[in-house]
Each structure stands twice: as C-alpha cells, then as structure tokens.
Amino acid sequence: MRKIRKTFILFCATVLFMGGYGVYMIASGSQIDFEMPIGNPPFVGRIEPSYSPAERSPVDFYLGLDNDFLLLVNKEHAAPADLTGNLVKASDYVKTLNPEMLLNESALAALTIMFEAAAEVGFTDFRATAGFRTYEQQRELYEKAVDKSFVAPPGHSEHQTGLAVDISYHGVNIGNSVQGNWLMENSYKYGFILRYPEGKTDITGFSFEPWHYRFVGIDHARYMFENDLVLEEYVGLRD
Ligand SMILES: [Zn+2]
Image 1 (cartoon, protein in one colour):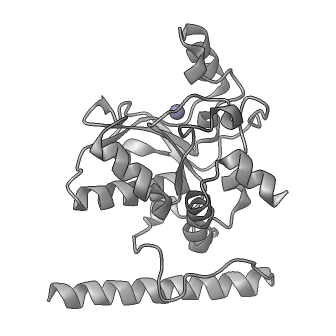
Image 2 (tube, rainbow, N blue to C red; image 1 turned 45 degrees about the vertical axis):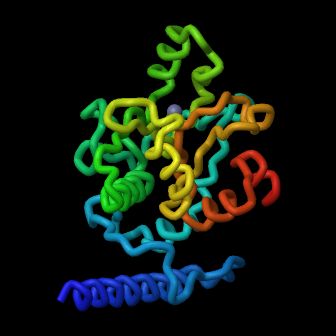
C-alpha cells in the first residue's frame, strides 16, 4: 500500500513538474541551455501554496532558473538596498533560533524539504539559526564582532539577500559532525551550497563556515558541487 502511495505521489509530482515546465516554455518562448532531469527529478517534494505564489513557476524553484538566486554578495559586491521581497517567517515551517526569523520563500521551501529529508535519515533536529538581516542588523553585528573574519561588513552580507541560512544541529555548531557532513554531501540536491568551504578563503574572502548555506537553486548547486566551485567562480564562468 505504501509503495502504491509513493508511486502515485511520484507520478503526480512528475506530471505537475512537466506540466509546469511546458507552461513555462510556452510563456517564455525561450531556449534553455541546460539538461532537464527528465524522468529523474532531483527530488520529489511538496511546495506549500502559501510560499509558492501562482504567478511564480515552480520550475524556477526546482531548477533555479531565476537568476536572482545567483546574486553575488561578498566583500566586493554589495547587496542591493531593497531586498525585502518574498520573505516568509521561517518558524512556520522549520525549527529556528529566533521565531521572527525571515527567509526568501524559495530558500525556505527548499530548506523545509531538506530538513525533512534529513529527518528521514535520523537527523531530526536541524535548526536555522540565522536568516534574513537588514543593513542595520548587519551593522550592529559587525560592530559587536570580536573576530571580524566571520562577519561581513554592513551591505556585504549574504544574509541581507534572504537566500542565506546558518544551520545548527541540536543547538550545536555542525562543524566536524556527522550532521554537518550530511549537509555538505547532500545540500546541493535541495539547491543549497556550502558558501564558504575550506581552501577557498582567498576567493570567497571568508574563513571556512560549516554552518553557512546559500540557496542558488538545484541546477546551479549541483554544478557547483560536482565541479568544486564557489559562487564567485561559478558566476565568473557564466560572465
Ligand atoms: Zn551566515
């Protein structure tokens, strides 16, 4: 019975997925130059209507066609000032440190599905410890920080995009933990990249941060993961 249910859900998801893709292609009339994961979607998840507005194609979410997801914010590139759109209260969907924490709706949808997948392998207590920050909040944080190598100056934090999330497990730093390793190995399947990996500090400008993940969409995340690229390198390749 379970198997039948699973098969049915998979079937429905595939139909919805392909239907959405067709509508997108007709609407946009454009060519898309990447490989579709036909018959083998990267994962099957649900998207709550509350954070997937009808005017936005779910395909954007699945594959990261929305180039906004590649927005580069680092010590050289400042975040645009008005990134307040599409923010959703994260605690309605995942465990958070701050109940008022906000995240971009697509990033949150992906995070919800990723935490559910983690729970299925026994990791039931992932928590989002930081999400969207305003310029003002980033300024306060920067001024208070003793070690500034882990904190971006105001205007230069990815957290100002709503696409970045800091993750802990059971209230503890996930560095050097099985849960941290699981995230490093699997997050790309849900559209996230480990933004500041070891050995890339000279490119990213940040020390290794095992807790900081950035949503870019599945297609981009998979490419970066498979080719060991950080966002600076990937965006550079596409320019
Ligand atoms: Zn962070």
